[in-house]
Image (cartoon, rainbow, N blue to C red; front, side, top):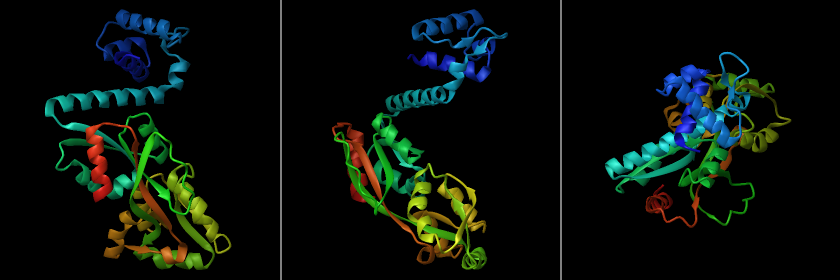
Length: 297
């Protein structure tokens, strides 16, 4: 699908009507209507609901709004990368990284890959599944994700190459000023927890490997949930509950005495940091970054 078509559809969704969408796209309303009609004919899909006045986006278009906005963003990023590469001479490289890895190791990743090579790094932070999807679709050259050491390793797809580039531990922490109160509650049979949604990697990891071991010792009270380890860290520091977060993220605060590491009492999860790429790629920037990641990180 042409880039301008995607932008037309996003403008229609943004404005809610043909007239305003035409203004957003800096064309006359008749010209915009003709463009949408051509697109409808090409796709065989009704994009405008003409049964209402004023006409607006069809239900089919609204149902795919998130996908269209994502596609438009990806196209803009691609064009931006191409323009930057042409103007600066820097090679462009996209690395998809799990949110927690980006937060705890982003600086190290960039420093290890970008210098002294002439490479512009875009670090895309995403959930684990999204990182894998970006790699498979070749929207990222390298993915960086966690893998739990104690779990069986799935067979690697033949078109991928991987390397374990580091280790991480998911540890339970709480604010030092609130640890006595939280541990007294735990001793009384209630553990207050900052949880992750079970459909994200860290949430599934805690659900499979931590909570079963606590059954019989206490009742787990999930005070709140967040999909971000940085938010979980801040909430635990405030005394709201105990959160399992990557050690690399927590240990600076533990060293300063702001956080208490409770892994000996509540358990931890050992993980590998795994890099993956397409096995047959000849992308020079990717191969150089891969060499640096696997030798320096």
